[in-house]
Length: 566
Image 1 (cartoon, rainbow, N blue to C red):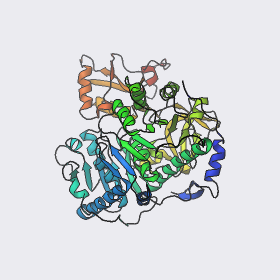
Image 2 (cartoon, rainbow, N blue to C red; image 1 turned 90 degrees about the vertical axis):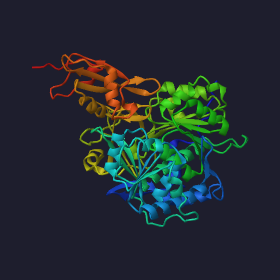
Image 3 (cartoon, one colour; image 1 turned 30 degrees about the horizontal axis):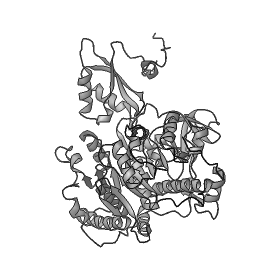
């Protein structure tokens, strides 16, 4: 039986006004960023290094646990600071890493990834978070785009690079320890860091099909943290604890998302340093039973992940064999949460009073733009919530004109969390950062009563298990096959993954080609999750409109071809 939910004691608007108003704990003030006025927290940290320094107070003396990995490796906040300081000294003295330099990280979730991130950003350098699923071709593109001074990688991914990587390479399993232990007892760097300096580069697919490097500044990180903390405080004021209830155990979150994603980097790695909430990290391929085992062992209080991961956790055949009574909330993003998934989460966690919370965002806004708490989702299950404080939300037409409530258009965001642009890609930046500082998300939706409802995903974007896949990248690869005359790639619905990739191929006349051959061809240069899971070989030309564009809805069977060829 699902537990009845208590009624909120305050409205969201009243709580936000109290928290962000003059004298409030999260008082906001106007500032000018890149020539645009935005609203941001008055008492914000100036940069990530300041957050790291302040984490020495967690547990009173930094003795609180920062992370523990599923192999038992762990570190306190104080130990993390000491490691970052020593590693930063090694990076500076051995590789001349300094302010503005790029250092690439190519690895699975490991303590070394986290240690590297804090050392790099403490120097005022830029951590280039490379996708651990990339093939050699994609890795080399990332290196050529960002021109790092150094590449830090685990052995498995370093082996994907044949020949000279073109940049000094330190392998975690080989020579990283010596670099990390370069200067025991060192202090953190004192290099000046500006709020608007780049802190990291996170990769997101673009309309060209090649990954783009979204710049995430120190201001962007701190704007995300402000919003996350406001959401936590909002919940505490709206649903105050009963004084007769027993004390709650310390909050402990399970982190199963990759560190090269906002879901792992922002939501877990950085949030933990700012908040003092420890995280238990999984390694290797996502394993729902391992998540359940760790939840029982460590008494995890919060689970998070993309919809695919959440489905796999709550529908695991051994779910009820593990003790999940410590879990008070489950949430995440990656794609829109269906009403069915919301219901399933509540049924899986009947002891939790407000078990579900979801948000909407994208890499270019540090992952958080709107939020919907459990009580909002019960009334509006298809909504992704209202704009978070400091984030402006609007719907524009294709000419950047605002649309009234209820009309579907381009979802636009503005605020201190929005990226200044893409690394070394001014054209893509101009397409995305519109006049007035508005971020054109590429998603379509409408606003009703302050709540955002998404009408469709980004144009042509396929979201498979939380991974963004742009069809054009796969289409371009298939176009290189000598047997392929035409191709279009679309997403098809999948209950757990959200979507899977499907390719519609028209071979040249008198040419025979198998789907296995095509799949192997795609897999030679693209990551496995981009290889189509479904294929359809056609003999008729693909339907197109008058300008030559393929009618994708017609291809998928969702619309009739109303164009007449003349």
